[in-house]
Image (cartoon, rainbow, N blue to C red; front, side, top):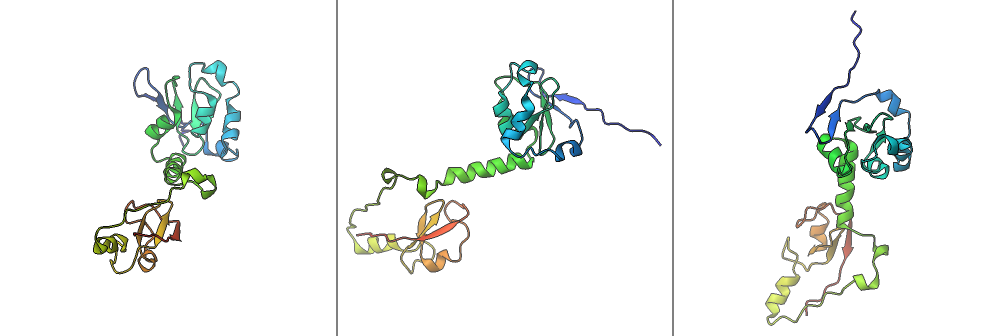
Length: 200
């Protein structure tokens, strides 16, 4: 029976660019470490400054999901185990991680969190100055005013439900009860708030 051993290979993207290296080390070696927190990953970068002085900061690398392998400037994602080396100060660890391992669960979770954070802020973060009341000029025609206030799904009842986190107001209660995603922006609806709007 042949004794087969894994020999990592380096596939250089460009001569001066970041290179992708096959995973070095075993899954077992990483699985017992608690590397889910940025601070735990940051603690692996103790000798980083001497090994890679012209590289991104340990904070940026650990925030992007990497740990330091202790050799040269080799870093490894604690989730997908991709190893990246030949870092330069101008490299963005998040972008490089996404480029070399687009299906990594860590990368995908960060993208989902980023999208969700861009859509909403907790109400407790809002100040009185952030909340502006909608004022609509009186309509010249009562029919126009009535149409503007109608549910954009059934056109039978007045709009009365505000979707969170996107903030769109376009449906009556009965139509809103049937929706899980906003019809305008396709954002998942986490909360439906009763709204009172005057179109006078």
